[in-house]
Length: 305
Image (cartoon, rainbow, N blue to C red):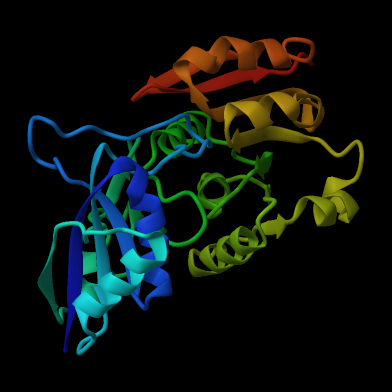
């Protein structure tokens, strides 16, 4: 089985509307690429973490519509163009997408990741390079946190450097649960994970079970009602890998979860945002940059005992 792609060269202001019109006309999927890709004129698109790019298109864009085998590309494009009043039709051509082993191709993109001194994050279709290391079996999924992002790495390396043996740990904004699992495997006595995304709670629970970790995961409201989340319950170690804006808003709550003498570590913070995040926590404890990686930092501090 094979599919056909319609490849259309358009201007910046037409890319989004044509994409929508092609979907309405029967395309299975539509993507927008830089028409100048792999040339000196190529231009990256990027914005602030957590913020959407206003227009996901380039000055010279290439709209690529995938259609079913046997569908008529000219008819689909004509219908989309008529809906937008495009006359004449923009330049276009087709290309064939042959059937492939898509699962194997996807898996080939994800190899084991070595983090810190002794941590390996290993997809289920690979063997651990070092079975004696701290090994986490984790497949890419809907929840954030596979160890590939600098902020996740920073938090994992901090936990490895400050092994929470016998301590109570709270992972707030747990995503896939990767930080909570590292804490558990490093000897934490109790580990709790909290996230606002129900899908993350499901994924984290499944990941914990796969890695033989005893961790309780909660949505914020459920956490507040659970014994471990009651007002006044505090933790020896609190980690939160989110983004700077929510971290600043949550300063009173997160600092209030740290036990006297306990440690707070935050990431999801760009290096240029470190000072303002530290200022938000200054009334409670002093945060300093513990490490930096690819423009991101981990901030850490200890609550006075």
